[in-house]
Length: 88
Image (cartoon, rainbow, N blue to C red; front, side, top):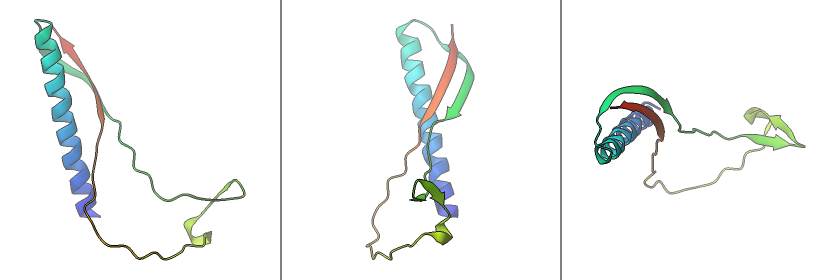
């Protein structure tokens, strides 16, 4: 779980850095500079298993879960941020 949180934090940091670089490029094209960050929000989603029975939500403990064997492989971790910058 700690590894998962570390990877998410790293992905968010990179997404935020990317947002700022894009904003700087746009501002530069307008002959302006970023003055400050107005707002930043995490646009990532983290879904867990949800089981439905007859159209109603069912707790995982009530669901019948099949065991599936799998081979560990690389997992892609992504993050999305929305950022608003003030430019002048």
